[in-house]
Length: 206
Length: 240
Image (cartoon, rainbow over all chains, first blue to last red; front, side, top):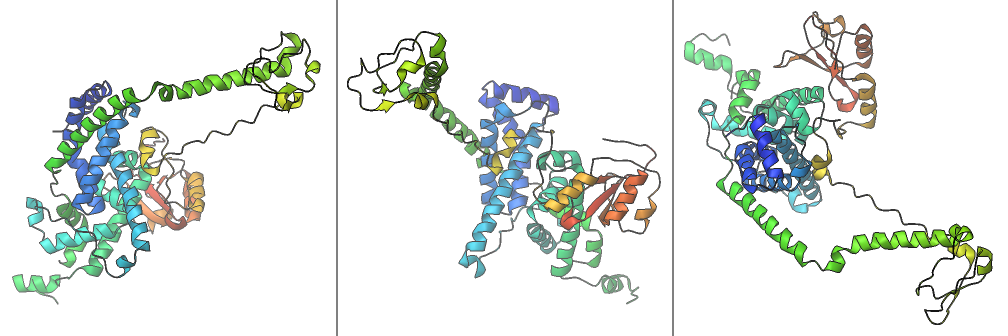
């Protein structure tokens, strides 16, 4: 259930007046997007749930500071993004100091989610590889790409959510795509297109 | 995976990432429960706080104001006004109290024995107030203090040198031109989905030239001291 800007503003005002039920309306409207961002950022369902809960609680306690001219959904992205970055920093610090991690701690879990019809066209292996490639990106590049591709935010909204300039956001997304392509080239198992075409159509020029 | 998949990376990413993600049922339940707990905790707690603790900050403020007032009166105010009424807390004698003008206050009359001496200079110099620590927000709490759509917070991914370059070059100016500037013609670009073209790693002297001819630009961030240039084709000229 998506709220438009006007509805969102009205609901936020009700929350500011102490209406808890109104906050639930905001929660229902944005929980999937918040959770999706956290999931793509962290690559782990438990962490994503934890971060999402944290983000909503912080939003609830800080709703008085929320400016009415902003979108609540963008504000939620920003809170979630900051918590995710913080958590990734802590995780990285822990993994740098942990001997266990050097001895082969399992990588971030790749969520096994039910595919959409579009994804059915892509092999399961490829989808997993893309997700693993996403995990390999620096957090800020990953966040920008996820907000664009998963949350379908505009460049301006991503800029507002991440506190970066719009030009920076475009640059980050572009670099994220390039890095992801490089990752796929390095780690993917490729089928020779020419041979494949030849087998199918008998018109191989290889 | 096929080579064509890489060529069609956007489609591949979209297909792989744009899966419908639904938040688990427990998210809503957990958040609302936590909020209910939060509200339930804060109200009774506030009521349960002893009155003394609740009003401690106010009492401390009053005490500070009183102390400053007394110090002021003892220092200079006493010259033109009636001598301050000392309370029982000053169990000292004033060694040169006669200099303060007016009548010598009766020190210690209500407080019992005098145990030390306090000269005028000591009275004149109030203890320096300890600087109040300024709480700095945690990184993850920045959201609450950062005005939305106001000045963007500093991007900590940029090196200091790169930030200086950004300040010099990226005055957030976009000047759209109908033709690709010569300086960028031979460079590789990425066509973005909003109609702009992104040029990465543009040499600084090229950027300087582009700035001079007013042909550009909004810059992106500067990985390792390089500049990204966004060029928007079109006849209109816009600045922001």
